[in-house]
Image 1 (cartoon, rainbow, N blue to C red):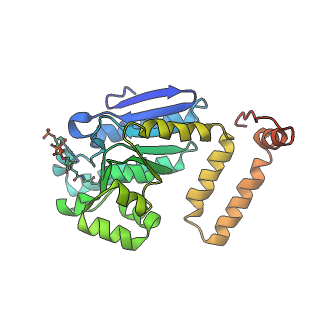
Image 2: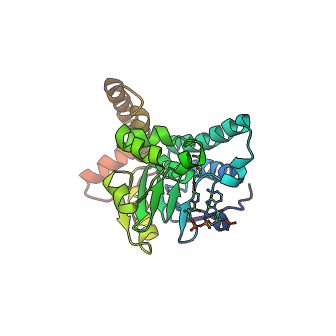
Image 3: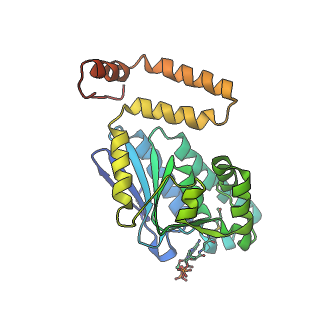
Length: 260
Ligand code: CAA
């Protein structure tokens, strides 16, 4: 696929995926959603890629939401399909084996916040802003935002944010647990890449299985989650990476993981 709205750059196993639709503050129209889905699917299959950092082009916005101009013309049926397509992208990120870090460099509103919440964790610029303005547009979040936000920060804070449509600053997003850490705008990407490199140095199967255990375990009872964790733990003992990781520790050397 030819990417007209994405910049994709891979260095030493880390891919920086930048949404580049600056004229609309990187808003998610159907084309951007399709490109993101295709790019992330390909990156997940690429053995050379160990982690992905997702960010927005320009200084103003990560993503200012789903594209309001495009949505304003939709029929009810088309809106349902549009939401399902956005949700398929959101679910793809959680199903990917590779970790995806959101580097939120500005506005993350509506679908933009939903996209950031789909990532495995969020780093943000001190100037970033977060919110779900949908109720002011006569709709609700449609790319999984009501579900993912309430699961992340609990229903009370999610209710306040979604019902009010209020935009909160980065410090509040950090305090509420939406964001893991804040950085000066000029440092954000390098800090996200630094963490991505740290993760990339670990066993790729371990990271993939840890993500699987956390993402899927959240939808299980605690006991089922424990059982699922134990089965993934056991499977890893059938891999060369487990022998290499433990062998390297015992031999006091750095592990050289092969992802198999
Ligand atoms: N969709 C389409 N275009 C958008 C957009 C969006 N979500 N957000 C910004 N743009 C466009 C603007 O229309 C404008 O284009 P023109 O220059 O052609 O007029 C350009 O980007 C720059 O935006 P502004 O002039 O508005 O910039 P600003 O600095 O004055 O304001 C902002 C920035 C506060 C982010 C403002 O653009 C804004 O409120 N955007 C909309 C945010 C929003 O409501 N997002 C939720 C969308 S609904 C959704 O996402 C549903 C869902 O869950 C699936």
